[in-house]
Length: 344
Image (tube, rainbow, N blue to C red):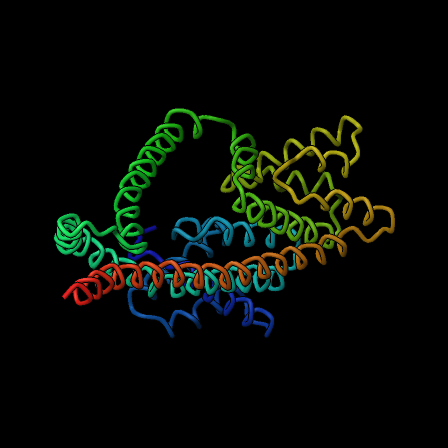
């Protein structure tokens, strides 16, 4: 397929959501895509008409979307929904979740934009004051045998430690980059995930994301009448998502050896701690697909709570840091002037 401009994640999710809404109203898939194509710019129409042509040739929708460069999680939702039959419902759930995540990402970027701009402006002022004005006051203080004030010491401390911090950061990023290219990306995909979830804070987020995605897809497959083993075979067939493909293969193989499903889940550190308990409870009451679906919603709520807490902490901390630095700069200039006026 001929590719044009790439779709943003928000565009992709919105497009799939609108398809799901049309499908629930009784539209065939090709007609739903054709209807949406007329509402989009010309370069998108060309892509979507090519998409319809590919669908009529017999290619599945997830393959066509992969050729268009769609997000792997979204194409994963499409792949699994094609297997279990709840196509519109799964498509709607996946697209709405992706839209919510994208809005959270944009919210975070907007939250950080203004403080980061302030930080750069403050940094420029800091360099000017530390390099130009303060040395003159310091030399004047020495001739008058006056001791530097607290805020002047703060500015000099910043000037001393900030280059050390950035040097350390640069070295850390260089080491991390070398480790990634020379070692990390060569490891099996499951081992990569085990290492990533050990990262503080980010690891907790990744565990919830993996648990939510796996649980909701397995829930839809089980609700479609498949057994756990059959559902895991479908995970194994999904080559566009190597992690879930390998995960499905490993769990399936262990199940075939006689291990219990919940016991297998406990061995995977990239799942949430309570996931195995939920799976066990669902198997005992005969409502595993419902338990998995509700737990996937619980994971989404926990992610939202974590993001909200992060938003409430990050911005005030940045503003406090910038405010303290600005006050220190002003007082490091004003206080020496007051000393000089007292001396006069």
